[in-house]
Amino acid sequence: MRTLALLPDWVEHARRFPGYSDELLRKGHTLGVALDKAILSAYTNGRRPNWLEQIRVHYAAKALRDVYKTMQDDELLRELVKDIHESDD
Image (tube, rainbow, N blue to C red; front, side):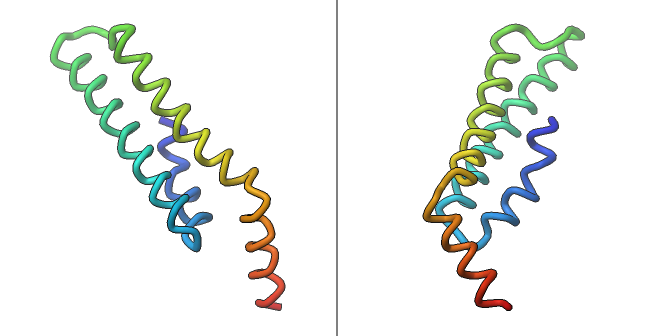
């Protein structure tokens, strides 16, 4: 849930780069769906999520974090952001 809570800030950082913001939103949606299914299943069955539901949430969160890390590590993106900030000065 921490990863999903960070999504709005990550999308805000990527707003000038539609490819990354769209991918972040897609991965965030996937994580949200996995969480919803795990929570609903736990609630209706009166037990904690099973191992498969936990793994789905774990990998969906990892996929979202990986997209953000890729965005942070993108050298071209860094140069564009640097140019944008310099032009604002």
